[in-house]
Image 1 (spheres, helix red, strand yellow):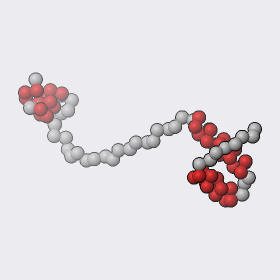
Image 2 (cartoon, helix red, strand yellow):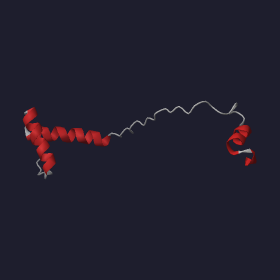
Image 3 (cartoon, rainbow, N blue to C red):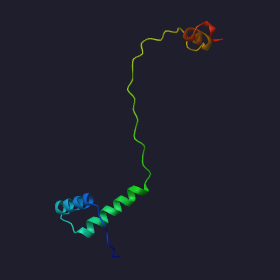
Image 4 (cartoon, rainbow, N blue to C red):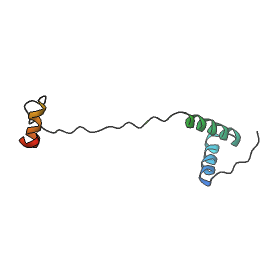
Length: 81
């Protein structure tokens, strides 16, 4: 299929650089770029991995965190009830 493309200046410059580096015809380079781009646009993007840095908070000040009532009393005072 024949068509006319209007390329932005930055895109045209990168294509020209690639043409010289890869020594490929313009038609072949454009078709390959479009194929790769269309595949990438169709695939769902993976979310970027989010990592947190561990922080040492010191020792636990509560003797038993399984007892919610005593943990709240220690954190908020006896008036939490």
